[in-house]
Image (cartoon, rainbow, N blue to C red; front, side, top):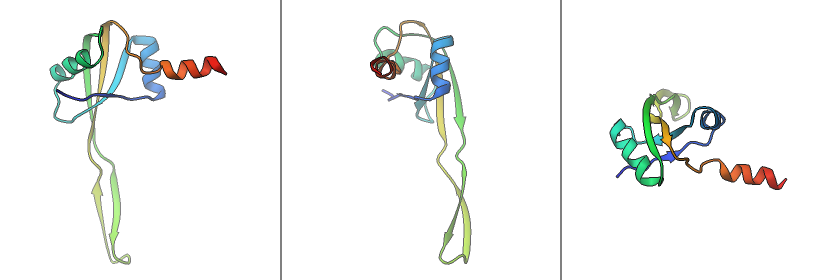
Length: 104
């Protein structure tokens, strides 16, 4: 079974409130059917309507081996994001933030 973790960003919060779409970090070798099954298994009462995936290529990073003698470049690891739209149910991702704001 896959482990999907929610992304807590401003864009993700906007998508949840406007379109009932949640953003998850997923393994790069996962397909849409596996992601939908993992979301429904991890979060009870969630029915997945649609899954969109994006592979974000890793940024280029410069490094040097020694004192500026042999500079080189490499890339960071690629990441994959899944935009999951739910037809039924809610996932508690941002509720903790809302409770903190109410207490203030």
